[in-house]
Length: 95
Image 1 (cartoon, rainbow, N blue to C red):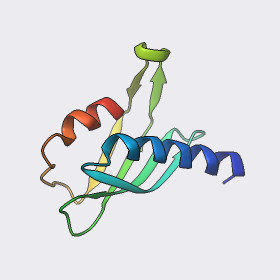
Image 2: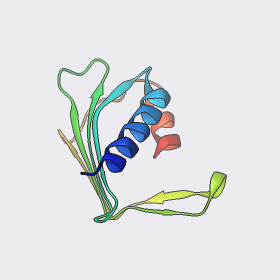
Image 3: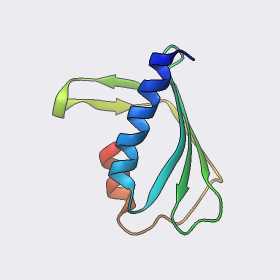
């Protein structure tokens, strides 16, 4: 990965962490703009091990407040976890 790509991933990870810090921490984030994929390791508070999240074929359309993030496939391992109260609304805002 390029230095610019590493920097972009870190900036996005820091932003997401600032939005979900009460509930979770993004431990690792890799954004592949060419393949339109995202891989992340996310530690939810109260969970013993981090989640592995993979987003495939993402798209960002629009600008500013009208921007929309869509994807064709998202995979989370393990397959289910109990979200801490309030986290869903934060995730909806970030994703």
